[in-house]
Image (tube, rainbow, N blue to C red; front, top):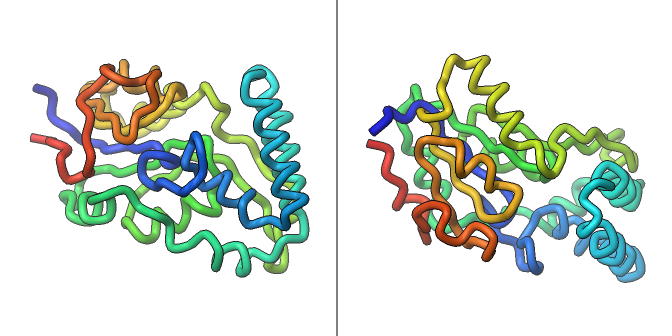
Length: 211
């Protein structure tokens, strides 16, 4: 069995599980924090674009625009602390100091940065929201396209000199499938039907075996 040198995880639905369907995502938690009319528009936009995956860049920017002018401290008070998956913090905080740890997500840095801090992670690879003077500007940067996660993991692994077989990764949904098939130690948690059976299923991050 390959020696594991890096542990990566998806964010929305895996590391954290917000109370929204079907993705349990921090992204939709941002939408839930908006006033009712904007919240309705948020979900209408999501439901329109989700089946049209080729339009993901437009989807991202459309929803980012809806955050313009929102006070980041007020939003943070509504969505933090993140609702962590069982054992998530305990698992990552107790890994060996030389184990590389990462989030790879099409979610956003506003949430991923909080998780990085709480779990003492090394790397976050995710989309970015721009903030100025304590408010969202309504602009952002698409770093992680919905179907690009494996490519980004490969780039990061190449920089670190780590083979995919030496990586453990935890995911939950269809945009994790490529990574789950590629890494040496895949796991699924809170899985959607699309990933059922692709990897051992855990209920708690402390069930992950690295040795």
